[in-house]
Length: 171
Image 1 (cartoon, rainbow, N blue to C red):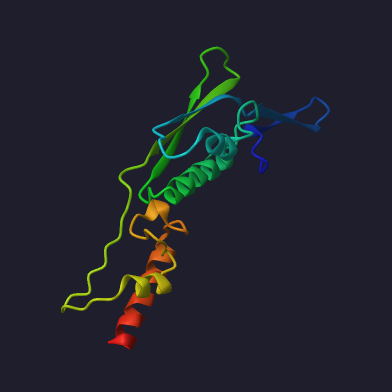
Image 2 (image 1 turned 135 degrees about the horizontal axis):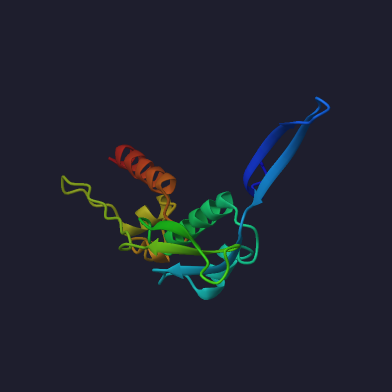
């Protein structure tokens, strides 16, 4: 059961005429994935998509694997600057065969995220100084899709802490 290869497992007990107990294990195998479709994608190339979902089609349906693929597609979309990307999947019966299912991943990229810093009080910090302290820095660090590191909440929070510390240290 823990392998995820079966949709249902039942143990049926039946008393025999001799008084012995006969146990029968009835299993219903998971269906196999026939086709994988990805909708809503504009950020990822076909090789990136194939790499992320590779090995799903024509294999046994594993819900845990689908969840992992959805997370991977979201991560890759974030690397392209779509930090708010959402990825869902839907499993539907295959029209041609009851033993097969089709899987559709839907990516909602939303707008690319950009970060703007405002120090207030007429404070200015030279651009080069900011670049040297920001992990998400780069020649165009405000265009996060072009940054050296993908935007994650951890990196953004770390950069905010660096800027705050720099602001307090440098006055």
